Structure formats: structure tokens, C-alpha cells
Amino acid sequence: MNQNSCTTTLADTAFIFPGQGSQRPGMGKTFYEAWPEVRTAFDSLDGALDSDLHELCFRGGTEELTQPRNAQPALLAAGYATYAGITSRFTVEPTFVAGHSLGHFTAITAAGMTSPTSVVDVVRRRGKCMERAEREAGPGTMLAVLLADPETVTDVCRDRDDVSVALYNGPKQTVISGSTGGVEEVRATLSNATTARFRELQVGSAFHSPIMEPAVGPLERVFEDIPLAEATIPIASDVSGRVYTDPAIARRDLTDQITSSVDWIGAIEELRRRGVTRYVEFPPAGILTALVERIHPDAECYTLETPADARTVVA
Image (cartoon, rainbow, N blue to C red):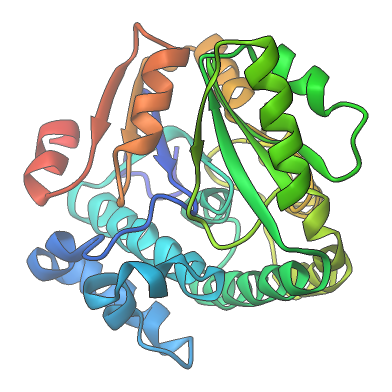
């Protein structure tokens, strides 16, 4: 329960926050226009950066939003500002929070572990470091592998130093990431050995792969700048698959996440074991709930696109 005694904890409910690849123009705009609490939170984040988050989120083009330095703070702003609006208007909080890749930062912010104005600057710097790593160690790409067992994809990547599994998104959806040539070789191997289908991701860099190694040192120093406190809401890690509140674990996971796999399957399975039956996805919503439905088919899943959606979920 939040320290505010008037706040109601929504039983068996996890609030989940998307990562890069989910961004789209207009994300969070309906909440911003309808609720002053969202405008206040969003404007405070906007003021912490030397760029216009309003322009990026509401009117930015797809190509501009694909750049990590833009996508990452924009995603955090859309998700966190909507969270601030809902929790203040309805005086509720979830039982757990979780985030997918960049969404992990939104989750720790929602959990009260760090200040939103501090973390929005950090994720902007994170995006810049990742772009620099891509220039130094790339070019790279990310490829979704569909209709193949994750174990099969893992086995094909196991002995390679240029390609790795980036995302364990669902029982039949795995994403590989790494050098362009290496990813093409893995694709060819899987095509010959399985009935897998493939989809290239337009995300701007080869995230969660060896390509990101040059970003590790600089980002460790960036993360040292974030003051972190014990979380007031437990966080399900998309790195370890465990639930935590300890800030030391957040620092470790957010550093490991740069080159290691995102285990969304593990995070959702852990939440399921802990009794979660409802998932609420924050803007830009839709991708994560579709994944949750495959991992935890008995769960209730909700996407927040308009204030009316929020009233349905929490009122």
C-alpha cells in the first residue's frame, strides 16, 4: 500500500509499461488534453530536457520517434504522465508494476524509486549512448522470429558472439539482435531448420545485443547519477524475472539490460505465480497486452488509450 492511507491498492493487478518499438505519434495525447494532472506531470518532464516532448509525442513523425534519443524520453513521458494522472484522480495503485526494456525505467519511476525529472534525462542520455554504440560497433538489426520455440532460437544463437536473443516476448515470439550479417545468417539457419516466420523491427539500433557493448561503461556512469530509494510498489524485473524493491537490484538490472536479453515471459510468469490476474497497459498501449494474453491466457488485459478506458479499469 502507498504511504498515502487514502490510496486503494487494486488487488491482483499489474500496471505494465511498453518499451521502444511501441512508440507512435499522438501517444498519451488524449490524457494530456483531458486531465490537468497529466499536463502537470508531462510539463515537468518537458521542462527537465532541452527538447520539446510535446512535439515529439503528439506531432513527431515516425522516423524522428524511431531515434533512441527521442523515443526513450517520449515513451517514458507518455507512460509516466498517464500513470500520475490515473493514480491521483482515482487514488489507486497497482499491486505490482513491470516494464518491457525501456519500460523498466517507467516502472521504477511509477514505483516511487526515483524522481521522474531525473530519470527522463537519464533515458535521453541512454538513447544517445546506444546510438553511439551502434555507430561504433554496428551496423546492426533486430529480427522477430515467429512460430519457433524460444529454445530453438537460443540454441542457434548460443555459440555466436555477434548475435544474441534480445527479447523473449512470448511462447512463439523471440527477437534476435546483433550485426546485420550475423542476423541474416541466423535467419537462414532457422529458415532451413524450422517453419519460422520473420519480421524486421524498426527500432533504430540493435538493442540487447553485443552491438551495445560500447554503451555499457558510459551508461554505468550515467546510472550512478540517479538517486534511487526503496520502491513503494514491487517491480517485476524483465531481466531476472524476479520481483524486487531493492534499489541495488534496479541498478544491476538496468545495466545488465543493455546487452542481455529481456525476459518478458519470465516476468509475466512470476506475476502469475504471485496471483496477478489483471494487467493494465499504459500508453502507447497494445503490444504488451497482446504478449501477456499468449503467456497468461486466463488473465484480464486492458489497454489505456483514452480517459474512458481508465474509468472502466479503475473506477
